[in-house]
Amino acid sequence: MTRVAAVDCGTNSIRLLVADADPATGELVDLDRRMQIVRLGQGVDRTGRLAPEALERTFAACRDYAAVIKAHGAERVRFVATSASRDAENRADFVSGVLDILGVEPEVISGDQEAEFSFTGATRELAGRADLATPYLVVDLGGGSTEFVVGDGRVRAARSVDIGCVRMTERHLVRDGAVTEPPAEDRIAAIRADVAAALDLVEETVPLREAHTLVGLAGTVTTVAAMALGLKEYDSAAIHHSRIPYEQVSEVVARLVRSTHAERAAIGVMHPGRVDVIVAGAVVLLAIMDRIGAREVVVSEHDILDGIAWSIA
Image 1 (cartoon, rainbow, N blue to C red):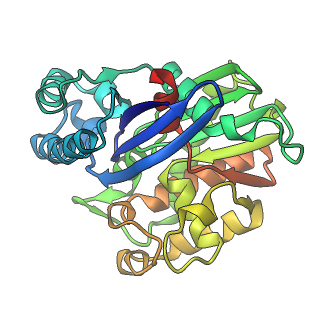
Image 2 (image 1 turned 180 degrees about the vertical axis):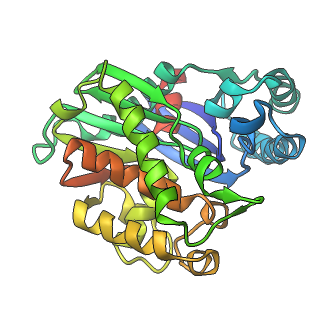
């Protein structure tokens, strides 16, 4: 066994996994898995820069994670940064801050690398399941970008496009500094139009419609699943590998689109940091299912974090 620590810093959240990995058996045993909403990508779509307050929130989370990693005695650490830090002019400030706190330099990876990690993390456990036909389409719906990966035992094709839940919220649902609620129909239509244009690009290189099983990752998807399952509080074990029919996804999206901030905040499974961006994220998920004709989404709690962990095991 090798004790590893993987950090995934995205546009909306920063997450940590400390695990014991055994490459010989394919076993990955969680010791600590946690997440903080830091909104690193705040305003990046508009300004092209990481905001000072967003950087400080992220560095505070890194200090917490450094203590956890030390307490568990992880032998190897890998810090991967995704969409927001790829886009920012001042990403050097982010890199130097993380290096000072954690002693490792964050790797600002490409969308293709992000897709490969996500695919490995999401599908390693699914190998050999007779009830889930391959190829898989893994959709990692993040804050700034969404990754689409088609493959079976290996990645056949992948593409990253800028239709994450934070980016879509800031682009279409924010007016005068606040999220409009409930959003007007033309705002939802604008999100769907952006998704349609992005999917046109994806389909130039990724055969989305050849996939037989849709696997959905990240907080938007797991939150929609938790609501569809009728959970009173977030239960990772119940959500992991749940299969949510299209009709239930559609019902949850309709509920969210009609909701106010207070109504969303009162949902027991809703993380406080996701209240403002879940509407856009859910609309993106449903638009993807519409495009490929998916009858259900298989929800995975294992994703890019697990892929990062395996990459250093």
